[in-house]
Image (tube, rainbow, N blue to C red):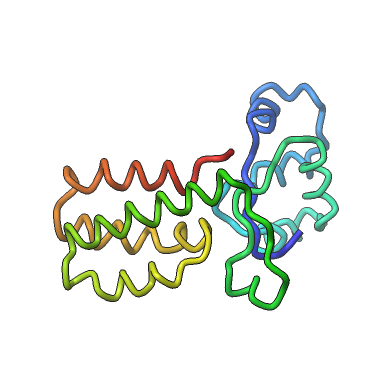
Length: 164
């Protein structure tokens, strides 16, 4: 597991938290609770030190089907490694989300969105778009208001964040 990757609970993981059928040890259950789809592996492991857990515990949750990788490490870290193969679905989602964000910048932000467009052009994968989304949302809401921005942001979030 790369320290920059982000994991989320699967349906099975959410079910386990509600039903407790597997009888997970309290430390593993605590780790499962920490996995929220926004924290990186490094952040989760930092918090898990209090439970005396390491990467092997996360791997155990992944092998049990309770968590799955949501995003790979950021592309800046990937520059040092060989490129990670992307699924066809991930590539299509990236292209669609990139185009949708580009169109919204042109249509709603205009010249004010110049720096945002530069950041968008540097995006190489869904993780990069995910990292850009909060700043884009803030700029869009400030410029056009919540009513206009909400459907655009909801569609982008669905493209970027949804699991395959």
